[in-house]
Length: 70
Image (cartoon, rainbow, N blue to C red; front, side, top):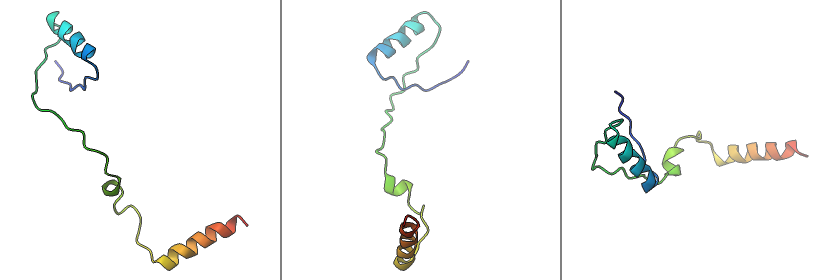
């Protein structure tokens, strides 16, 4: 026996699962806990991803990049 967690996207999917349960192929265990999907917080995700540089160093690097195309 295996245990899996499913996200049911449509009511029809739940009905199919109920049919499988009626055929004694699966057993549905109702978990009354609802999982809330948190919005993606990009600031938290990428916090610290870039090393700290002085504004002068960033300007120098940008100018170097721009000058490569000239």
